[in-house]
Length: 302
Image 1: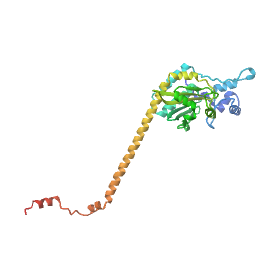
Image 2: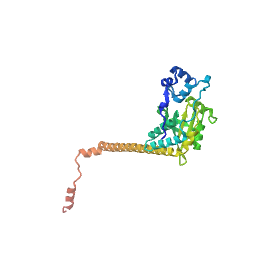
Image 3: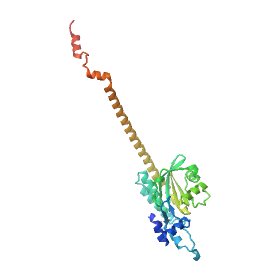
């Protein structure tokens, strides 16, 4: 059984400084200078990966020990495939879209030791974010964010080809300058796009990011055999979510229709009550001859 990674592999500044053997102020300066990679959401706390800290702490160029960060995945391809199948089994009982994407994003990010995992749904000429999960947790502010494909040609290429696409570093020639600056602004250095395709149609897009340049080739091969299963679980949850939204809208329409009918009945009753003819008929005795008197008159002999 593959062991999924946990957020304990990422440490906040005080614990990271203790592991590195320096003060938090020193570690903060090194991170801000770009010497040590860290993840930071906006102006939030910094998170450091434990193996990056160990490499930085043990480096001693004067003694011939260079500073080298491990860019490879620490999980073997076979373990990745096993972990993916285990994740798919965890998705099977989920019928709610939010529950499904939360499990998927959090499970994938921990499994592959990524800094961030975003999942998108296609909507015309753009993508809509349905979940964003990073080492700090779920960023609900990103939910519903729109990604226009005309501004991100690399993502468009992955979507149109329905094939995984990797960016190993910001020096990758496949990136446009706008895409490169966007990733740099988010503090990200590498990317893996994984289209979820079912029946030849795109149902979703998974994006995995890291804060260091990284070789994603092992992940691409691992997803080749399980991508259809992930797409099926995601498509099922998306379909059920659309059905639930339709049912909810139908219930709202029924309530509105019932309210309109009740209002119509009340207006009809009120108009009858206010009618002068109705009021006169209710207040004055009728002068119309009764049926019995009419009958007796008609049978009287001349």
